Length: 373
Image 1 (cartoon, rainbow, N blue to C red):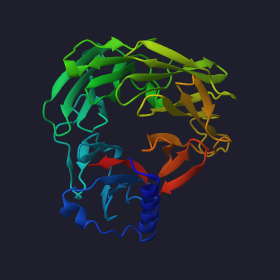
Image 2: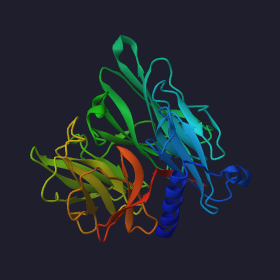
Image 3: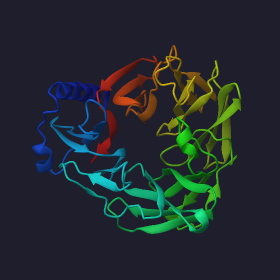
């Protein structure tokens, strides 16, 4: 993760690039063979491409040189040395490289009967697990989960779920040791919620060759938010207090088999999610909202809050001095652990939240995707 100084430099760089209408010099990135980390951003709106396309920015972290690639896609993820994304019209998966190449993804593609593809990548970006939710006989669903290295080697099916009339598997996390965490939830219900919500969470230790998943503690739980530490040891689960709102937090140390409880912040919020757990598993940041409906984006009624769950102190606390009028959701922890990068799902940009002060400032005009080494 980048330092504050580097974020400032990149933010200024991108702003300058946008003022220059996207005129960039990127040939050196292809010539250098990724000797230095390449930072990846995406812009979907006025800063992006034309004709419904998005613009990917590959930024050389040493020279500051940038290569842009216009693509028609969504759901951008760094996998190994490339960016994985999906064509929203055809459902096909593609990948973009830091030298400007784009191509159909060679080993993850929908079948004719596929209703949905979902994927999750290990923190070291070396492994990927993906689910194909397919239409089976009689209109039922069957979900097949496959695990492989980022380059497509060592592929194997690790889980087959169904056929079932309603339920599908949705990936939540994958550790470097190939422990796969997933949810079983009704097909199509996720599209009605602003935040990712989970119904019944499991883990499967694919690294040891296990074939039978096991329920996580207290599962199934409410259809609420959840998150995991990068190593899969700490499991954070939001639990709704009542219909008026408010979310308690339960944090499990899965290795020790113990949990702690942290009460909801006040005043309560009716919706919550986007739980981002710190690398050491001791803290998590998540987003809350009030007055959020299907048509509320321009209503002026929406209010958003960011909250911290401190597992060691067993407390929650709000991070903003007053509610925000726009959604800013946790995206990544900063390298020093003192801040969190944020994004707005409705517009381009990357923001940084300082945990100690609650200060929020924009650091880039495009949205952070990840780092390619």
